[in-house]
Image (cartoon, rainbow, N blue to C red):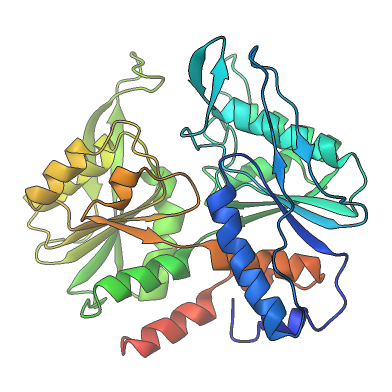
Length: 382
């Protein structure tokens, strides 16, 4: 992603093999956006290509059994399979009932398409922005380690590369130390959208502060504060470990540590907004401390409890905007909400694919520091 990367030049050089894309059911929208960038770059390099996408599907019988179908030859191709394990909008008929695909179903479909390729491809890579089972990343008592086992399954099936975004715990790559595993952060894309929506915003220490919603999100918030040159605060959660509600220990209170937020704009980054209760509780606490505007960001804006609480928080002036990527399914209601700003990451993924397909280093794609510096300079911030 630095100024040295020229994807058009890639298509003027020999590739590892012919590049092709497969979209798992539910990932068609993101795959089409990725394909659009790749086709544009290829045509700019004089390579006429209408699309890199191979039609595929995972049809189901009335009993719920399914199979994977790839509708063109893939022999010798460099295959990139895109999957969105969190897309709950995909449905199928099961014994006369409409059923929604769960993350388990999506992962099964991924394995079906890998089987359908049947070892004929030159190489298979998986673009899985939201890691399947990623929130079940550690063992506390006698419990499963879903993500680690899933990664090992993919490795055993011959997958060579995994590309994910903002993994809940990137140490999961230790489960497959011999497989290429890249965890990217869409920091540049988020800041670009923040400045586009608020070109007058100041990142001066006296006017702006980054706040981590908990200790687990410190690393991503620390990066934001470092590249912006502003201060960093943190909330930590006091939980009731004697009780489990919806699979989690309920939060008793949020305690703040850091610089005074009075009169400052606040930016809060996390990997997932699920129920959103924690994010809104923090926003309320910040408002009590006289914070000015509050901007929230989550890589995966899934909003499992709906949007009512956020609509109310926006109407009451608690939050001023929520930024979220298109790396997972977003409901039409969310996309039409006045407080939601979508961050498009399809071009970022296309950079990864073009680099891998031509055996180029992706270290500059992963580290967006140069692009962020140029962005801040463009807005006269640095």
